[in-house]
Length: 372
Ligand SMILES: *Cc1c(COP(=O)(O)O)cnc(C)c1O
Image (cartoon, rainbow, N blue to C red):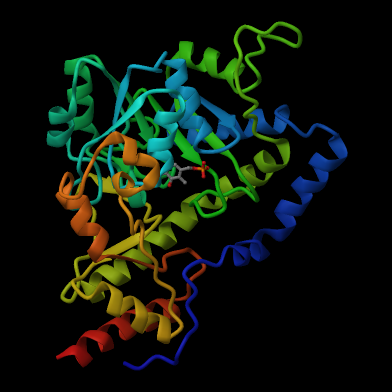
């Protein structure tokens, strides 16, 4: 098989718009002429459909997927002197959110599938531990039965960082409905994306829901009464209206991501490590991250053939300058550290054509054939 050369950018967010242009523009015009730009009906509508999609009692819109982590942990009373356990292989907001409320991020290494290792969580628990934040990295759920069992045994809260995993299924349930609360980012790069920033919190907890209603809006109980100092972290109506349109398309988009992942799995597993689903899970492939000893060379070769491939993430969080005060060193998290040198994210988004995917596969196969 020989496929004509393709241009395969790593991401191409703009092309998502054209097929849904009419639906989106009708909503945008409705919001603009309503004059109701922050919170309000469109936000409530989106919150309701998002909660229904995740299977939770509540969903609360906020300004981004970092505030959603911060506000949820504040709602549980976590702050100075407390510790929260997180994986060192994640986007840095998983750690900064803990630090920004005055608590200490404590890392626990990951497994082969990039998600937090429950055995390592146990070893990281101290009398100061208040919560565990499993990150469903790459769109695959962490091992939530094991995480929840530990949390229960030690009386800890579980906050799912589901920023990359909207719609992912673990044992019949969606992420965001597997812990005490779920945090989502609606950043343009995520699977369900706003035309700007946005975030969501899902929960079945009445008390947390009541807190978040106030906490996202200056701590206001009503128009004039402020119960506590808090952030302005509201979702705006324009984003909510756009997101409501996109949520209807999300199942089809997810299906396409999974189909592309299946093509990579089928055609690359003899050459590189590829992620695969266990029988009880359906990952949503926010990223498709392979592992190879020849990562840098392969990335350069793909680049020469106009195929974008990236590394998520080249620097584990405990290596960041911002984390230096935590006192971790190289060697503390061997799995994460090894992965950082071997991982490569291939393009995976619904708009990719089969030809683009097959060209990427063929180019990778050529790279390894030339090595022999
Ligand atoms: C994107 C992301 C966040 C932060 O979301 P923002 O909306 O950019 O604030 C947090 N955690 C993870 C794992 C992410 O991928």
